[in-house]
Amino acid sequence: MAELIKMPRMSDTMTEGVIDSWVKKVGDTVRSGDVLAEVETDKATMELESYTDGVLLYIGVKQGETVPVDAVIAIIGKQGEDYKALLNQGSGDSAKQSAQQAVKEEAPVPAAISVQETKPEPKASEIPKENTGAENGRLMVSPLAKKMAEEKGIPLEKLSGSGDSGRIVRRDIENYKESSSANTSLPASSTQTVAGKESYVDVPLSQMRKTIARRLSESKFTAPHFYLTVDINMGRLVEARKKLNDFLGEKVSYNDIIIRAAAAALRYNPKVNASWMGDKIRYYDHIHIGVAIAVEEGLVVPVIKFADSKGIAAIAQEVKLFAEKAKNKKLLPPDFEGNTFTISNLGMFGIEEFTAIINPPDACIMAVGAIREVPIVVDGNIQVGHMMKVTLSCDHRVVDGAKGAKFLQTFKQILEEPVIILA
Image (cartoon, rainbow, N blue to C red; front, side, top):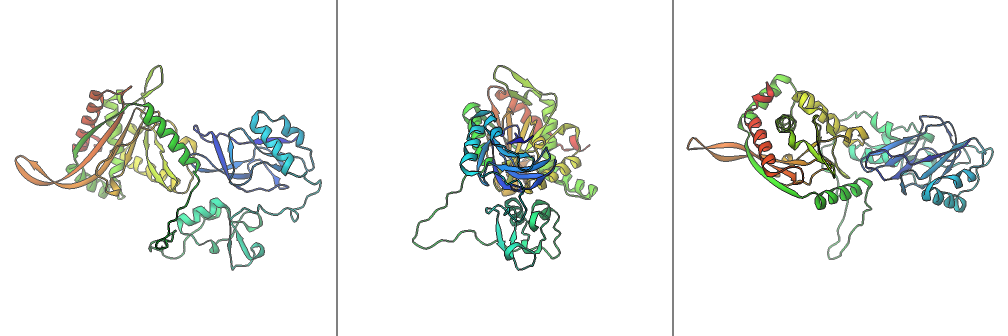
């Protein structure tokens, strides 16, 4: 019997998804575990797998269209099976809309359809190709694969597609090995201006940008923010980090150490490791620290779980893995879930001080600035010191000024005496 394929909820905050591309087309044989489509969620572009065997009888959503969670997007069944009645039985308005769309746009699937009769989706991204074997002398590539190739600087003409009809797909980009030295030249500008002529480009909001706008607006205008800033002498930590990197034989960043220090400070100040739950305050025994990572579409916040029980080297490896996964859009919903405190670090961009909007459901977020060489007074003498500003944004419903100040005091003591966490 034919089965409805609905848009799944791929993350805890997902309310709708965008069909980035269809990997399968009407008439294709589908087996459980095969990738049907690439779906852009509020946090990443993910592969939608089939959970049943059969033939793809119907596609109800075009490439690039937005679909609410649980809306019907496709039907899989036996070859030649009548699926129109099943569409009408779909639950909810979304299913009804899909049924109406099917009646208007979808022709019945022939009882004996052949691969030659079914053309690939015309909206799949195409680029010229000189190599042989591509359809009509052009290289077929999925939108996700094209985007990944652009981000990594991979020339698509060097790839052999492993998808249907030689189509380049995500795994081809991931498996590509660069044979020549990396190109370090600056990318060409994506826009051109004409003197004396006004122009602009409207870019549709991605699912990630929509979610960022909604969640941070809710946070900013719902949670009463207040801010606490402290200046930290990082001199001893600068020296300790050099020795730590020499000992480990690999690079540990300041951010890795800051995550570990924040986790230790939260253990001493558990009232900051909390969430506002409407009619109660939840205090967490575990410490899961969200780490803000910038990507092209916006910001993702993967979570270092049980950060207080991990060494700095382990945290460094986990952050590097998250950064690579974020770059390649491979973060999964479990990577984002469970944060109890968040850190946003713009120090690597030279930003000395800033305030961050609280990342729900946390009660606090800490904004970390750059380490600056500045004159400082030590025992009445002026010396060159390494100072860093951090600003704690607090939800006043949960954390009062004294609680936030005590947390920063502990955090400052740990970084100024790093042996506490390096021991």
